[in-house]
Image (cartoon, rainbow, N blue to C red; front, side, top):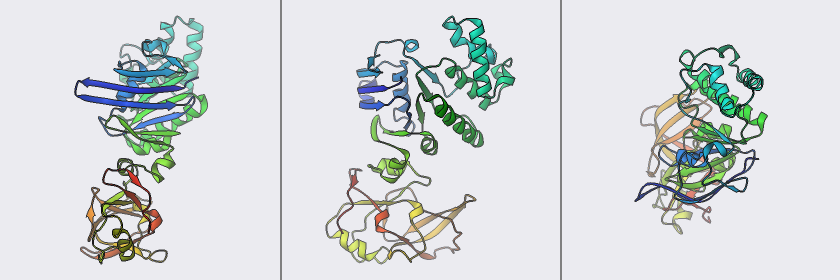
Length: 359
């Protein structure tokens, strides 16, 4: 069993700076839970609190309803995979994998059997007599994961384990980690700043910003129903387009009907729309923004276009459109980009999601 419950957790490194702020969270047994957020948001600190590598100032941590605040890391029934692999350089791959079992005084035949099984599963059985310095980054990460697997814990903790790998290898290792979770059905708690990684792996994503949870949900919930402007802007590639809603009721560069109806009742609104929801196709909607394309990028299967909108105050860093079709454009050419009203998100000036204003 690997249920983790956090109640009113706080952590400070300085008297006036809380890293974790009164945080409550439950991770169910067998879940793949991802802590997602920018560097410095507190996600790794939270993972280390669960592991027992950091002490908490306030609150309680439970594993399967057992209070573990004062329980030593080795007695918590978990194993951790670190970003920097943390392998013993003077030990072979076999010795690195066997070490946790040797500490528990596991009989030698059992150690050999378990190590061989894990090495076969992770496809590192040809490297058992090699030293870490002879391995690639991907192979070292497999050894680090194997050292956690061989302990057969109830809970696996991953601290940005793929961040040191190249893009192609990260995709491959991501798939391997997902398959391991599907096979072993253990609780996986995974820290990353990469929202693509989080979306691909998680059963449940916990969005963290400045030591606080902004949103908890499935990847689909997080993407399609962000409850805060931070979540909306942090997820998606490219991220959501955000702008201050036009105050002019006769803005020729923005959908007049939408502007007129909203500005009568709502003076302060931030609106957002996903880049893939903007289109040059006017057949399904009469609502639009006007702008010129100043940069394009090909991703092979689609294109990203960077837009200079007219008549609106951009809240996000860029305005972008993602299109399956190549758009022919010239410099300073004004185009209309159409959208459906149902695809717009509204946020208050406090950043919280608003109900769709009454039209």
